[in-house]
Length: 111
Length: 114
Image (cartoon, rainbow over all chains, first blue to last red; front, side, top):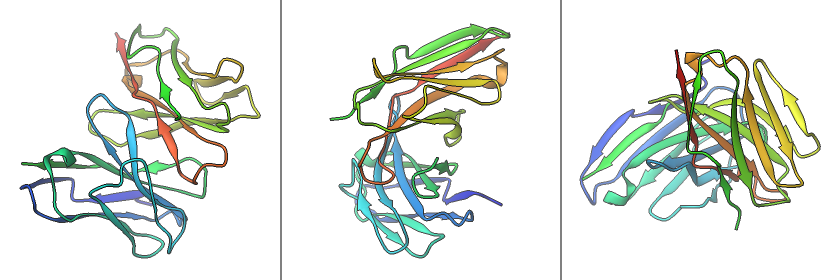
């Protein structure tokens, strides 16, 4: 099992550009999450999907959209990237409210 | 609102010694707590969890203690090894909160001296 995979691993964008971060899990988990991690800070929840077909806002949803494509995949979209969105993005999955398993992260720089 | 914080941002220990990493939480209704380890350039890795109906839980070389009276959580690592060097995060999930609404602390960096 690969666990949680994320693509791309690195990305540089210019202000105003758009992009989609991809996440997939092969553990048959119902719940999936997107976090961002900034230097010196813990992870902050952007959006989550408790089950296929549902999505909800987390702590810092502004500037982002998500799509739960199917049970395996949960994507995060930046419609118009801003320098404040420079961060490391982590996707995670869990079986309902048990421990979350994290992907390796996407390092995004917005110039 | 909820807050999860750590008493010490950095901790340096000698190889072979025991490590104790502390965490305070503010929501007395939180019912689930997790410790994660994050190595440089990697995603957080689950270490151990504990539910609010327990005071102590042990894993391999790790023990989590929960003191609900003072809203304090600690992670004890026995016989600390160089491979334990990482940033450790505690996280809590509030009772009745949205599923997946984990609140993370800022992390403690553990350095193990050989």
